Length: 495
Image (cartoon, rainbow, N blue to C red):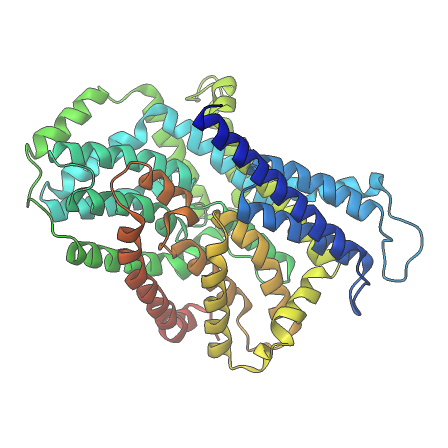
């Protein structure tokens, strides 16, 4: 047996053991006596949640497989439970199916699916590379200017490509090309700095725009379901975009202080960037169409309070324009091949899990056990928020997916805040703060898909990222605190 085959067998055995352990834990929770205040259906959904989160943390099964298994377990768990706490006949699998699939009819899921399709269509034209090289050429070829150019490029791509992973997959190869143009190895000080920017920025800039990251519209739907005012595209920009700009400025400051660049300017300067743009050729019809469609889409998103068309519906319209024969830039078959279906499945199933956890009372019960009985409910608003943010910071390290983390913890946090029945508690503000923490923590590569894409290029080590990530975490909390005290009360997010 070869070393590779032995390693594969060992990995397979480990995964089987983890899956069996997860099933055992789920079974034990299901068979345990039902706690006071919790329905049998809620108990079984909590058991399924524990199994699913355990699979997400350990990555024993792929995310797409975990999504399908989650839907199946929800059907079985609900189908063989009475529909109310009073008991009675079982709900039945026929009635449980639409509940288990409810996440796939959710506007947040539609937003995510359409956003991933838009990202696939836009990147098929090469428009994003042209925009990136033009921004870099505009800002200059000094090393610090190039670092700033990478930051600006990430912000611009956030509005063009509504997918964190797609932005990272676009930005990292461009950065690798720049490092090679400097004539430096990827693990040079300049190379490390550029690749760290490419790995951290897609998540940071994405949290500032409603369409910039898949968890954002899902969080909006969670809040709306809890009775909070629906947050629109402009509202989200107003609340979080200034934070991301300030955070990016701090990132630029740290990256230019912690790394000693080998040269002050890109060799060849603007000639290198002009060559890259020339290699792309004249702007194609597909690129022009994509640019026009995205311009119209962003305009409609930004004016949602005037026409009252839901942002997810606008996204679907954008996808329609991108695939129509006369206006489109990609065929349906090609789009099908490019779309990340695992993420689409994961979001739909994850939203179903969160909705059912809330409907069955499981989220409220978990929040009561985790937060209320711990005494957190008696804290002041500021102390309560900071404590929740600290908890999320440490929980974040358990997940390799930001999406999985926020889908798993947000319903319980919302349930806890709602259960306080305190009008002075800014529920939306605290939940958006949770989103900031989850998406801006950048200490270990394995906790973020964009960071892993950049890490895979072989330029920086985990130690390099920790060296940058720890002061970034301090900066993140300082900025959140400033927003809580100074900025968010002014814009109506904090009381």
